[in-house]
Length: 261
Image 1 (cartoon, one colour):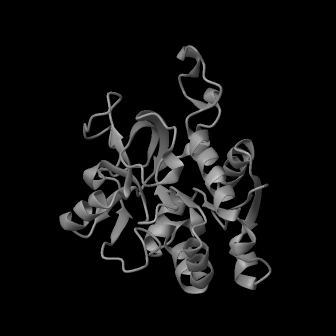
Image 2 (cartoon, helix red, strand yellow; image 1 turned 180 degrees about the horizontal axis):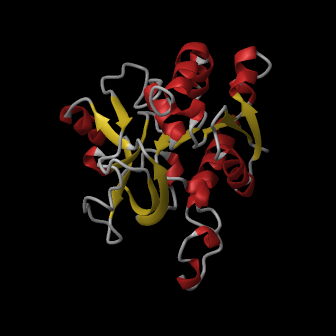
Image 3 (cartoon, rainbow, N blue to C red; image 1 turned 90 degrees about the vertical axis):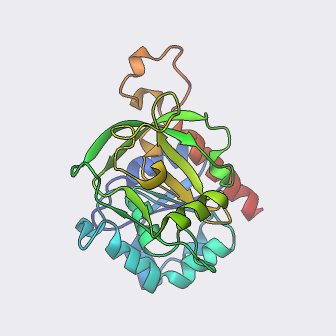
């Protein structure tokens, strides 16, 4: 079957075209749709099999990064998004999209949620735009299958520090397998700044809901789906067929097809 993917955009979104390109290369049929089309009722989320909320600076990041879009999702599209998630359809929030899902209450998870968290200013006090390394730390999320244990990924954010409401909350996420990615050095070890680019508690780079079908991550997999997108690609031998980030999108497309069948 053809997986229909929607890349949700709004004023300030700037990663929608490359996200759609990654989805297309992963085998989906992507559409870039403005959030207003859903607010007006001309489109419904359940017209699609896969939802991706891409990176950028939605609504200029007024108030806080992703907060205005988060309010639209949680107040005006809540029923649609809750239904989409309840049907186990896949949702990915990348960078600003992660911020919107987290601040909208869709992560760590709405049903009986006992843990809350936010994404706030980087400890460095500056916008961090560079490459880092991730370690896959949970297999709960189906989007991580086939990923290397440790792999490079680019980041570009000013408010990416993951802060749970308590240390107990962080332990709960860990126990439930909801911490999907952690920032590490190239040897896969926790090593502080600059390997952890923002000061995230527990080196958290990405989390999922309890069911595993909603993933939020600060790094940008759509910026590494071609091997030539790596800053040192001329030094990589042998050059792989595709960048590591493509595997996340392939997994999401495969999972969406399974849910829809």
